[in-house]
Length: 397
Ligand code: NAD
Ligand code: MG
Image (cartoon, rainbow, N blue to C red):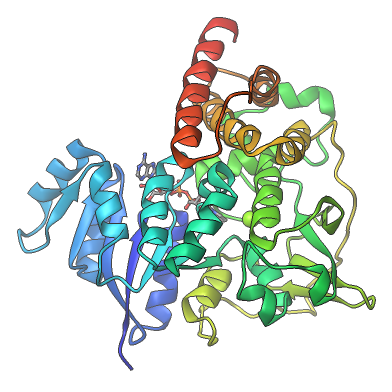
C-alpha cells in the first residue's frame, strides 16, 4: 500500500490530535507530510519528534523563531499566513485536514480546494463564511470535500452515494430524503435556570458534558451558536431547503444525526462521542479503517432522549437560522461577530449572555445593499464586521 500524504492544518489542536490518533491506528496507510500550528511550540516539538513531517508551519512568526531553536535544522519551519496557503496547496499533498479554528482557516482551506485536494473539512466557519462559493470552487477545481463535523459526517454516512458525490448541488428530494435531523446535546447549560445564564464563568462554559474540544467551539456549543453554524453547514453541503432540516436536542450525544426518508425510514449514525470516528471515516473513505475508538456498548446505555430546542435559552441558534435564510452576507457577518464576541467572553470582557446580544446588534445593522456576491466582497465584509464588533464591545460592554 502506498501511504497517502497527509497535511494537517491546525495539527496542535483538538481535531489535530484526533487525526493523529487515526494515523497511529493506521501507520502504513498515511504519511504525516506537513503539520501547522499557531503558537503552541511545545506541542509542535513533540509532534515533530513523533511523526517526522517533511516540514512544518507556525503561523505566528515569533513561535516559528522559537521552534527553530528547539529542533534539528533538518525539518524546515515556515512561518506566517502565506505559508499556510502554500502548505495547503503543496502539489505532493493527497489529503488536507482543514482544522484551523475560525476565519483564520478560510484562506488555507480555499487554497486546498482550488488545488483540487481531498479536503477533510472540520473548519465549519470557512463554509459558513463563503457558502456556495466554496462548494462551487470545489466543483470547478475537482476538489473533494468530506465533512468531518460529527453531525454532517453522520448524515453523509446515512445518505445515498448519489448525494455523497454531489455535495453542494445535490437534490435531497429526488433521492427520497424527507429531512435531515441535526442533533445536538444542548451543551452544559441545558437545564440551568435562565436567569443564571448571565453569570456563567468561562470555566463552566468550556466544560462540555460529552465532547472534549477547543475553547472556541466549546463556547459555541454552550450558546448553541455551534448548532446554528452547523445548520448553515448542513444547508450548504446538502443543498437543503428550510423544511428539509430540523434541529433536535439529544443530550446523550450517542446519535450523531439522522436522515429521514419519504417512506418513513430513519437512518441514524451512532457511536461513542469521539471525533476519531468521523475523522477515520473521511480519511479512509470510501473504505472503512480503524479509529481505535471503543465500540458503543448498548448494554451500558441508559436512555436516549429527544426534545425541541428552546429558542429563548439559545438565541444564538435562532440568529444563525434567521441569517441562513436572509443572505450569504448575513451568515458571513454572523460568523465574524460571533468570533469576536466569543473571544471577548473568553477574555472575560463580556458576559455569556452578551454574546447573542452583540451578534444580534451586528445583524440588525448590516446593510446588504450594493454588495456583490464574490469572495473579495465577503472577505471585506468579514473584516469590516470584526472591526465594528470589537469597537461595539469596547464602547458598550
Ligand atoms: P483548537 O482550538 O483545539 O485548535 C485550533 C487549531 O487552529 C490549533 O492547531 C491552532 O494552532 C490553530 N490556530 C488557532 N488560531 C490560528 C490562527 N490565527 N492561524 C493559524 N492557525 C491557528 O480547535 P478545535 O476544537 O480543534 O477545532 C478546529 C476546527 O474544527 C474548528 O473550526 C471547529 O469548529 C471544528 N470542529 C471541531 C470539533 C471538535 O470536536 N474539536 C468538532 C467539529 C468541528
Ligand atoms: Mg459538530
